[in-house]
Length: 142
Image 1 (tube, helix red, strand yellow):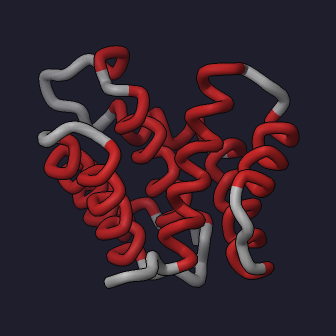
Image 2: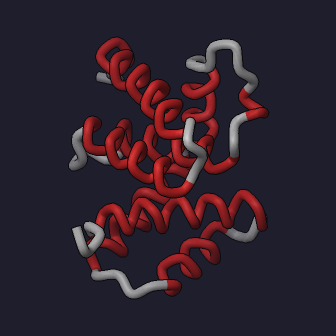
């Protein structure tokens, strides 16, 4: 695979934006603008990045609660920042971005964890997201 799929690039950009926001505390609109300007993305990818970033920011606290309820024998505060943000991003995508199947969101998050985080991260991310996915039927908001 020579060229990364535009949505993968988008997810990576959102992770970078969430990370930048977390570390700098800059205004979220500024962080998003900087992220979009860092690389040239096609219009659809720009829209995807903006939507996923906004959804992740809007639902961050809710997503973190979802993560906390799934940590067995582990302190939320001890989670690596990157893993926590990747989980927030993926859970946001699973619950609030309708045109992406949950299994795609999960496998993308696992692949991104393999590339950007520790050796154990992909398994951890997989475990948490799999648990989120399995409990979705019980949580449906309709």
